[in-house]
Image (cartoon, rainbow, N blue to C red):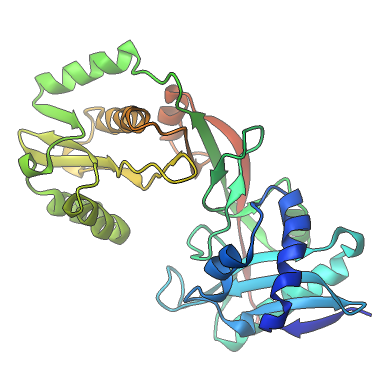
Length: 325
């Protein structure tokens, strides 16, 4: 008879073993005690009352975790569902439901009105990009639509709000197409410079970021510039008009990607495309093996990524359920 238990650290190794068998089968990266601790137990949003194990025959056969935080986007109303993992031999809707009900009950107890599977979840789960030599992406932005949890959540009343497409490109042999070189020349004639510019020669970076209204960018990009980390910038006669980056090769060979932003006053000059291609070039120049990112299925920026050589490798559903009182 299955028994649901609240989290206790004594279950750690069994949960890691379960993860490395079942979650890895669905494409997630394997974990050891250190990475499990980084992602779950020592994370500042980890709540032992929002994590559960399913025991059967005295062994851990399931693991579920969610997180909350009023400081998170939508955090005042939403609880985030991070994962539900079940051993294949006991995988039924009834057992999935036992763990999901426990998470939803905890969210209600904390005053949350909805449960979300969303890229704002700070507990990030790395996964392997299919058909690559274990190239990995640092976060699953939703529920993999090719996994076992997705159809269960649909049956349990979760609506699919949108889809995120994970895209990938190896950087060996990347080169700027002639079309992009012509666009760069045209922008230069209009007074724009795009590339890894000397930050001391570009004024107004923080003002430009403030106009883009993204708190993460406003914190990260100036910090990188202060620390001497290259950032691809667009400048119009010495004043910041956009950015892409920073240019960081991660230990796993991946090009770290924060985003691209163009100041509203400088839209319509092709700067977004130029910034992205220049970012790919900068990553190649420092020996980065590959880039990966995710984008909304209907996001017009997807055309820029495809033009650069990216291909869609997996899809993730953004899902939500309204929680009744």
